[in-house]
Length: 101
Image (cartoon, rainbow, N blue to C red; front, side, top):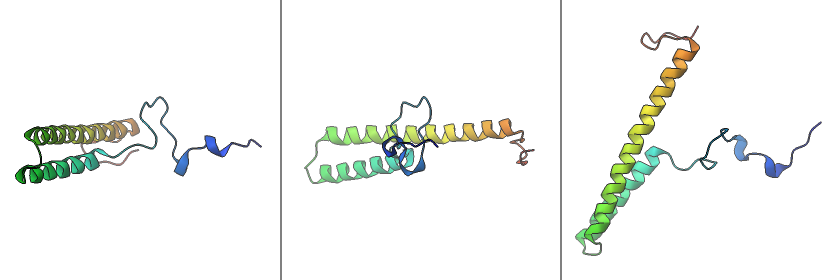
């Protein structure tokens, strides 16, 4: 029987993807980053109203929100492409909604 050291085992039963350069466990999702960027912009606008924040802070918050929206749309599109590829690989016809053979 082979024994493994606990320090070498992945946490929470998750395995990192081979060849992945992303940190494990993964960070916040695109949807979470979008919500955070929206909140940052809201707070920046409030600080500007009270004269606490500079115009540059609001511009940077708007840029972050635009970037987060773009990342979210890209993530949704990538997910849809992956689902379609999976359906094709399993032999289902994506147009008809038919179950795989």
